[in-house]
Image 1 (tube, rainbow, N blue to C red):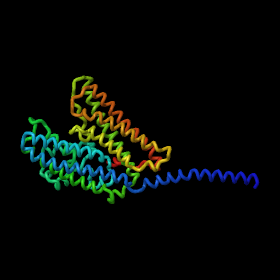
Image 2: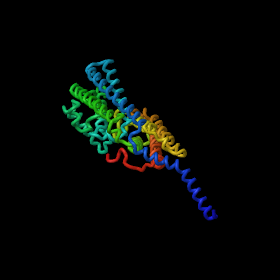
Image 3: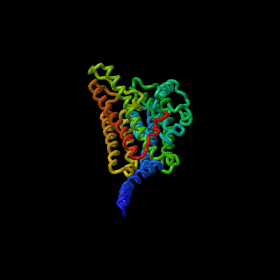
Length: 378
């Protein structure tokens, strides 16, 4: 063999050795790209079954406690008080369980406005708020039966309307509604609760394992749901909360005089003083969905820390928000507000960093490109 032939042979050997070394890497990248286009993974299906099952169970409990409260409302004493407290706890349970999945705005959520029938949000122009207030004044009969209620605006259905009526019922005794209004409120609550039982059952069925709607959703779409959830919790909800806090701080003018902390109604569950708690529950839901996604097996060894890093940021944000949950609806000082603003800003920063890492690190590692997200088109 001549020297030139020998050199060419050696070059072919080097290229072949390089291809052999790269082969596992190429196969793994290709496998990741294929996996992200496949239907909803079983691990995510299990999470959805559990999460929507809890929502459905909470809706049934709310229906029962609403009926008990309204039957006891005409009475006085411990029985009426206990029924009202049970109703409040049932509402809080449904609000928190719904918050853990409310960011999943994909597939069945959009069919026949099912998701918005549970919670009409975002309400960018305040139209839902105006419709609820008008309904509470005019008291139309169409709101008093679940079947006729379902034909009305989605803003008059679900959790926001229930929360508004509950606020009226929880007013001090001197401001309690008269008998006529109280009867309307109870009947309206009953139809709202009945409607949510039916709607959550429908959504739970469509998001359950084996449903055609769930089979149509791919792994890559679930990753976009996570990205959309980060936007909802951070930019939209925590952003609105921080803006509201800053406005109230300016009104205090640096005074140490206590004032009630009231968050903007642009954030769900502000009336019930659950806005911050619900954001914390939503972040927890995002983290749990990410944990359920079978991602680690699709990553290279040097990419294995991507998911852990993002989940750490989510945990930090959730813990920060939880420390503020007790501030709503009570007297606060300017100093407390300043500290709360810093905490909200920190939580927002963690979510923003998680979103950036998702886009710049995890997406490329999985062979994904940015597509739609769950808030597009709203």
